[in-house]
Length: 299
Image (cartoon, rainbow, N blue to C red):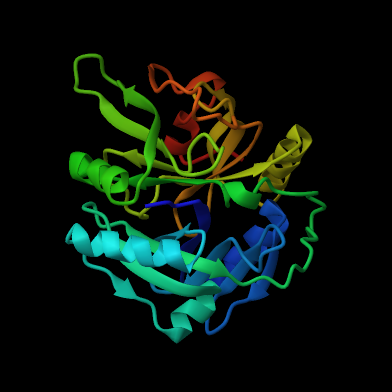
């Protein structure tokens, strides 16, 4: 399967006003009404890269994975059928809301919902940030990345590799206790230069997602976003730091749907023909103190 990028994510909330204020005032994204019920969060020329739908629970709902064209989409469906993977085609209303010609929904062995799509809708309206963010790094590398819970780790890894077609970027075996077995987190890439578009973490997460990453092209914008986070009382999940594997300099904060959002700059763009998969032994070169999130966040 030839997935090009993470086209969008879908979140759910019982308070769309809270999401609107967070997106506009903290993230610096444009917010528009989505078809039906929900909000579009716009961060480039596309109508949206995030969709927030109403619901009783605050949670992550789905990852939208983009294929190049209808032929690749039909080939993906044939591959799902050949490998015995159940899927459901989205109806006209769902396709309209997602903004694509067609949507196919399947789930991995850990229950994560994946939406395969082709033919995005775009009026090429410019992105004009309400907070003056010049641009987010998207284009053919997609929204950014998503890190999903995979308590059924081996089966889920096999699914995303052998069915969805992702390949390893690198591997992190987290050892919070040297005497305990490591917690596995595998980082995966698809058909673009972004270091990873997907990662799988071998533990359950109540919100349905560990975190989503968005990237800006200027470190100043990361600092300004952290200032806005403080000003609006959004809980910090991890302090500013630089990751060892993708060299992203970022901080983490809570979203109104319960999962974290990484706001960063400087992520690696990789020539996969020259890349060697490796295991790294510490999450960051410096910073990224996640204990602040365990303590309820700092303002």
